[in-house]
Image (cartoon, rainbow, N blue to C red; front, side, top):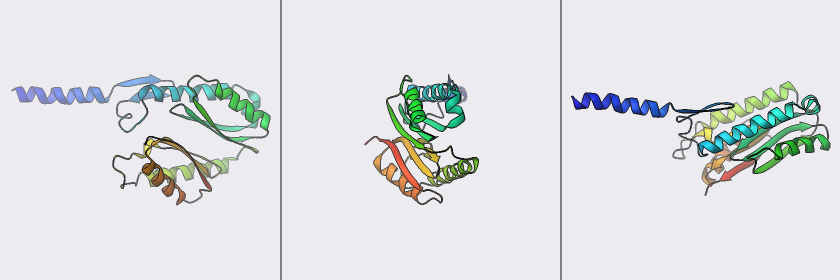
Length: 194
């Protein structure tokens, strides 16, 4: 009789624990999503807030919205800003706006002075990113490696890699990325944990 009672109780406690969530501006963080995450729950929430606030501020500026293309990606307080601006003044305006957001520890300014990329170029970037994600999901040589630990951002064929990784993981990710079609350059923005 005790065994019949304990098994459902154990299963129920595991299910309840696996379903707890924290609401954020960009959705929810579940215990399941934290299994392969190296950032703390608080770091993830701060990163999501940084990105949300950056886009809110930048998109509220008609000059930036109409003349520039930008992507803001936060990972463990480090912020990668990519895209194109027509001049140095607008480039500085974007970076200055992002710098003052609470939680920003470091900015990687990779904005190019150029006309905004077109839809065809952006679609190609999405294809490159997807191809890299698929390649990373095939990694079997590193124990406990999960491709979701690496953020991949692609702009005009330049691939930016972010995440908290061990050096051997970073090397494998870089080498696999290098082999993918369409990759012009790789910029690593890894935070190494060893």
